[in-house]
Amino acid sequence: MSQFTFLQAEFPTIYESAKKAVDAVNPDPRTACFYARRTLELTVNWLYKYDNSLELPYQDSLSALIHEPTFKNLVGEAIFNKARVIIKLGNSAVHSARPISVNDAINAVRELFHVTYWLAHIYGRNKPNAGLTFSFDALPKTAPVPKQTIEQLQKLETQLRDRDEKLSTLLADKNALDEELKQVRAELAAVKKASTTQPDTHDYSEAQTRDIFIQYSGQFLSSQSTIRQD
Image (cartoon, rainbow, N blue to C red; front, top):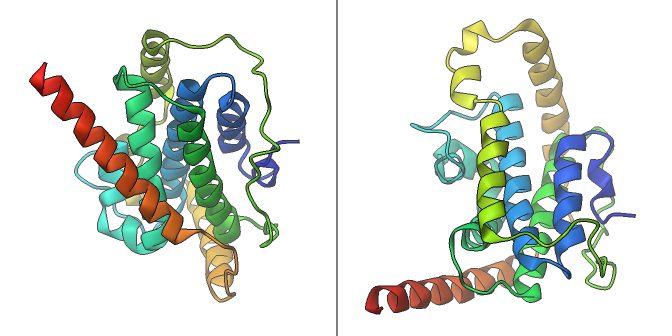
């Protein structure tokens, strides 16, 4: 059973992507980091599509979407910082020759676990148990697919993004949204309102996230400095 099973019923696309990240942690950390970022991207796109409190920024790149003030206000500092860690690790996995360790993959998937828990807690009709925790021991030891190269991941990244719904097109005119989407947005707004009146007692490990972000920021800056010197 996947540690992301709490997503399966109401967020199946996000669940499938998260499961791919989990399955790859031990046998293929680079691919795990790729799918962690991919899952975050699907999560952020879902939020912009269905939460009418969010304002679309000047472009719909993942970085621009998470830095938009309405998004940061919605998710709070803890989830925002986790998103930044996932993006850093995902970008490094796809666009850098820097070795990606199992520990890198664990950090990416653990941070993703907290982000998607928050999603399910706020927007899910069936709330996940507040006591859910991420377990290293439960991670699969083997992967059902061969290990991916950087080149293969870059090609996959392009293919997936070409298939994705374009937020800039979908949300260009809120008055032109189809009736089904408007109805779903209204229903989710009610769910969100009810959820935010209840305390969220889940442990999001905020201090650990800050430490990890500082650690990786230093590593990436050092790596970039080395590349410039070469």
